[in-house]
Image (cartoon, rainbow, N blue to C red; front, side, top):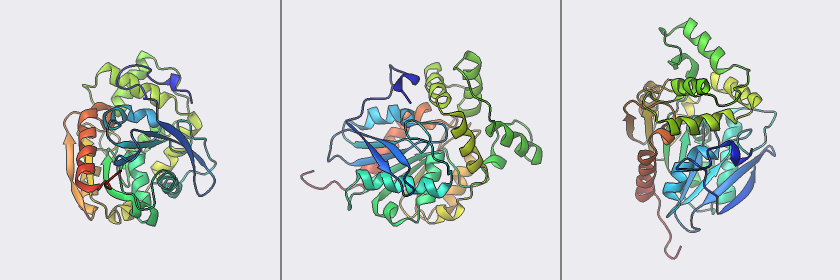
Length: 305
């Protein structure tokens, strides 16, 4: 995927990395990885959500890479990571392990941040020794561990079988999204962002989401429909903070509070009034500040680094 499919100026334009590399997952899948910021700085690893890419983290990368080493990667089939025949949550965990192994020293700890499906990636990896060896702290943004379709409020009717059926068919639609038109922006804003989201935020999200290949979008929608990572949440022992927008229709605040209740070491839930599902884009300074706080509190930088 070319960077030209994304916003090319302003705070949501993807910054150029210091270096790029390919991490190879357990099944041979290749993952595009970018490293930003100075070598030796405290590391932050960013895992994006369904239909997104490293471009989703542009604001966090710009804000953190001055004094952090920021590692962002494209989930398989997204961005510049090729699609693979298999789509499962355990493969997302394999992929995260591969990225950690390719970018961090054996004894190096990082703050790991997951948005939406990226948060689910973290939950899927929670029991993995490699993840535990590298996770100093975690930030979960706009995510959930199970019943994603049943709890979604995307369809504005009473919860139940009909709403679940309609939501499943909307999120799992096979149709291409097409170009980013004014109507496409309105639809995307309704489904994924708060009502007060600025036009440049909506534009950035629309360009990122519309760049996701149709087959990839559909394949991962089927995984998310059946996802159950409740056990993984209970095994996520690293100090973990949770962020959610109060107007999130895809993973409503109910999910955030369920996560908080199940996490062994929850640092609390931050609710962002009026914001939707795309919290790192809708509230870039706040999310960046939360990451900084986690690094300051939980990541020890070796002297001389």
